[in-house]
Length: 339
Image (cartoon, rainbow, N blue to C red):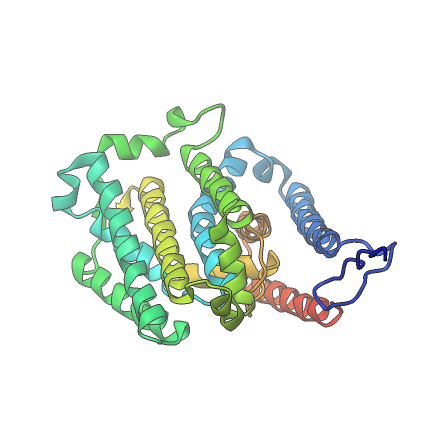
């Protein structure tokens, strides 16, 4: 007898209809809609800035300033995006940036020059990420509690190191990176670092096994474990990545401000989480995009710049940010309920 091959079936065991598009096309379509929506919001903000303060907002120096300010929190947000996609949270990123910046600008550290400052900032960031990762992955602590404890500890240690004083950077090679002479084709070095971190983050999330494991852990940790993924080790790596991004951001902040202060990175955790959320990253984990998070950072930074140029109160600015976050979460819930 002639045996006929059985028709292909999807993950639910059903035979897809002939005209049914693949699932990934639907996911890509939703991602494209989110990206286009964010680009539309950013474009609208640029129009508003151009109308309210055309000479100041559209000035090349101001646009460079917006991108430079976005670079620091943007690098932190890339690491935060990975953590949230995995189903975790990191409330300590701002405090880690502060601790790394003051530790890297002590007199003893500055004696080692440019390399000493960069090395110290990165090592402190990674070290804090290691502590977070160990407590969460192997100590079975809830991420909220573990990173909240790190927030308090890192802030306290940063204050102890500085004694509440600003530590001035005296290394010319570090300070020169913040000057206009260091710009390449009109692009500040900090923006180029941010671009490189973004590209690497996108490649890691979308083109590597590490990225797929991150999404799997966030989507269903138990299923990921049964599939052979070492969930605890993956979570440890993710908090190490977040700490690394904080160390890089601390170095960028040192270049931008020319100093180290225990107040650096204030509310960075809220800005990074908010940028990731409005960029389409689910707080419950399992989904997120680096591009969306970066657009979220640019939107918040542009809002801040427009409010500053129009001499509007910071409390109104915070209310506007809060409204955007609430709207983004409501859209996420509506999208999730229809899929």
